[in-house]
Image 1 (cartoon, rainbow, N blue to C red):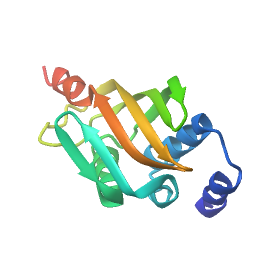
Image 2: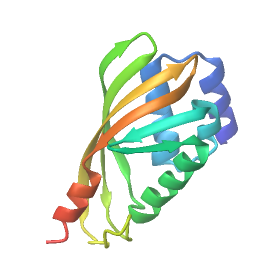
Image 3: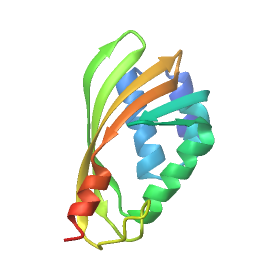
Length: 145
């Protein structure tokens, strides 16, 4: 089932907004880790605060951690903030129930909503580098009260 959708992503030359929406739904919404090889360069780099992460392994591990901790995760909204050449700045809104520890933050079993701003740099049809600012940890901590 996923194979047809992945092939259509590559062959239909979707614009970057549709590519981002499709990739986010497949990866976060559906847990389809096969989309990583199609959507992200093998040289992928992610910058989050002072930390830098590399490669497909990081994307897959992080996706599994989030989907395990927040199993009912939903993408509520994706909007493009700006687009210039091969760089897309976008905001995504998520919601779900925090059911298991995430990076040392104990499960609250409460609903949580958070926002992320992402700057994605493309190399042809694949994301090669991203800068990510997320308030997930902050929102999880607020729910512990």
